[in-house]
Image (cartoon, rainbow, N blue to C red; front, top):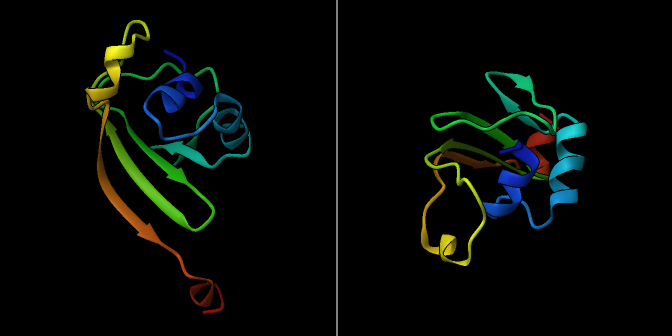
Length: 92
């Protein structure tokens, strides 16, 4: 499954277009390297997401073969780290 679609299905991004934009702008990385929208997600991948003021690192637990309504209750990822950057931190 493409990473932009995975981010939408796992609810790490609200819309696929939003996920695509984040990928194109280099805000989603694996092993310190920015990912492209066509990257195929694999179980065990550790992905770093950079939101406006929040950084989240997740590990992929499950990559669904197809999207079905019953997928809402299944955890697709686990959060490894989450931190917030406050605007005051940017000045230091």
